[in-house]
Image 1: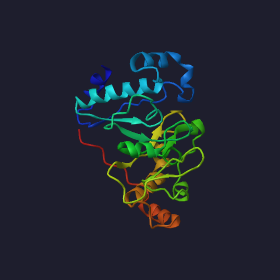
Image 2: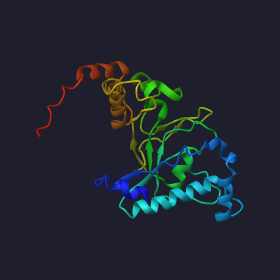
Image 3: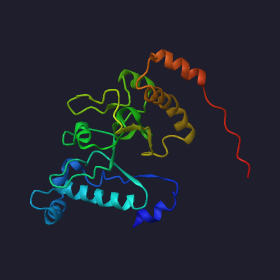
Length: 235
């Protein structure tokens, strides 16, 4: 299995994001009848392509655990099967609810899955601003009143929020850099672009929100400034 070949390159890793998204357009999964046919052959007439996907994730998660790796998967195709339940030990990297067919955050909480908040509209730094994304900014993070329990809204703008004190299943938040257009920015430009919004996320994540006003945060950010480059490591 490819996992076994790649895992050897990361001997100190304890977690593995096995993906599980974007192999088809989930909003058009019925356009792929081969998935439904295979699902029905395995799990009965009520099964759908989402059951087939869930079974694949579950079996891969078992394989990962046998190698000491905890499984994590993107949320958008999960908790949507009719027959096969997602392995409760699989953590969900919750990045979006852009389509009404996606399960709400409440389904993950009810099922007891661990969660990592990958809020895409605030913390996706997509090179070239592809797919409608705009580079993250500290001002938008404050305007959203973001904290680690605030996840992307549903399509009807309903807030999805876990109030404090946070449950142990909420494992944290993440900031993502995606190289959709690798030539759009240099590494130095990316570093400069993520500096303030990444600090803003850290401020609000660490404190479960922030008592600082945006202007106060910007003053702190400016005082921190740009770290001096590290000395090269000795050979």
